[in-house]
Length: 344
Image (cartoon, rainbow, N blue to C red):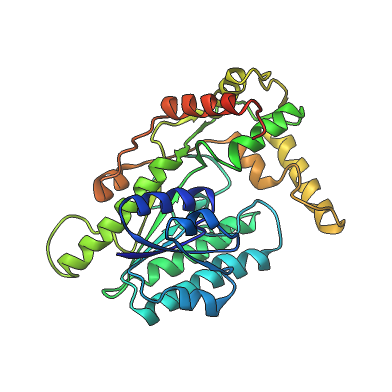
């Protein structure tokens, strides 16, 4: 069974490719970064970006399932750049699927698509997609998710997964950024510091993607009108570890385990939001590279609850997180200690 994985050289995509290869699957990867190690394992690699519509279209030939994990991520940048990759790239991929008769499309979305500017405590999939957010990433991912779910049909079954804060050994973003800022003395507890947040271990997220594909395959088998369990196609699902943590306690426990001083300095949510407004304005006016140290979106994410109801994923995908927060954290700490440095 041939599969296409966009972003197959990324943190999640590479783990997914490894699992597909272990199952004896034929895998094509569409990505911008060459991966000779994957090619040596039999992966067909297409070097292209999502804004290359012709390459994206051609990559779908001979494929039965597309796992669309690639995206432009970040909390800051030009809306057009995010739109070109996240929305137009997804549209091109869907068009390629229709043209080449691809049967299944699993889209990696994000819980940020339901951003409301305040706490999300036990949120479920009934929340509407955001149309107002101070960051282009959630806005464009919401537009792309809408396109994916609207494309669901008897010929092309689609599903969207919303993993929250993917982490684990090899994570190049979340934990390394926390460690770097903590060691530089630039990390502050935002708000009261008691907000609860869900995370998703990368292996659990891979499980969810494979379960989603299985669910879409079952939808093909039973047809559109046959009775049966609740259908998964044309729907979105939150994916997490199902163990909300007090965010700043988890960060400080991780720092202590790595012999780093815990974060004790604080900033109120109101002050962090005001700082975000100032930084955003400065980054728009001045030719400053990189992302601002604070934005309104980041302030809200660091200070408020963000945890989700997994009932739908458990019931309709058979999703049950295998790697617990405790086990994943212990593995991560041991890995960092083996590296002999904490910025690996």
